Image (cartoon, rainbow, N blue to C red; front, top):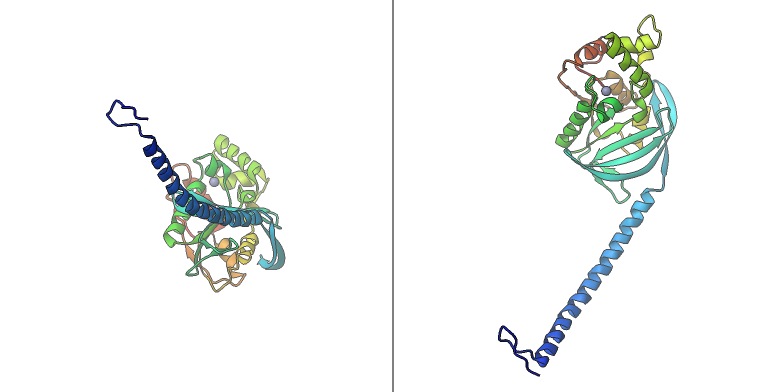
Length: 290
Ligand SMILES: [Zn+2]
């Protein structure tokens, strides 16, 4: 039963049996422990998976908002949510459908979540940004506007604040006139050297520039989402904007909000558009583009 090996050790069957026995006995204990831990993990995972499944079932609430002086019942539906890891830390992205003309809403939230995935703004301090979307600038890096930088700046400000949310409205691209219209204005800017306001007015065949006609955006849907989350006037809300219309949307709904300016220094491409917008839309600050 003995065989000498190269390194001088003996092959001993008893020793092997003993070793195998030991080998078996240790994993057995571990297996039992591991088994319990594994079962517990499976149960925990299962509960969480079920919660995420539940969150994929649309959740609808009807809320009342005031929009440009009119009382409206708005249906808000949460379609889903998940975390994103950004250069400005972790946000939860929520997908919403709102029963207004803008319909699609994407909301980035920096806050904890409760058991039902509802944001919990612990100290009640919320920095809110309404982002009207700009596919050409934010997605494709077009240099003629600073929408991308404004979005990144807002995310940075929210990170500094510790909590907040960005309500992104894809259908409000082109100051609410839509992506196709906006692409048309870019054509006039590129070919004829018009600024953004002149280009929009020219496409609409307007003899006089009417600010309301060139910016049909409304913000009742944003207020509706705040109400969906249970954010009432008791919260300490700051709005990251230079656009007085966005502040008014909060005020007419009873929110006493502060304002955090979002200032992006103009560049050679954006300066004349920003000047034109300041003149036409009376934004509070130069260099504003929101
Ligand atoms: Zn833009």
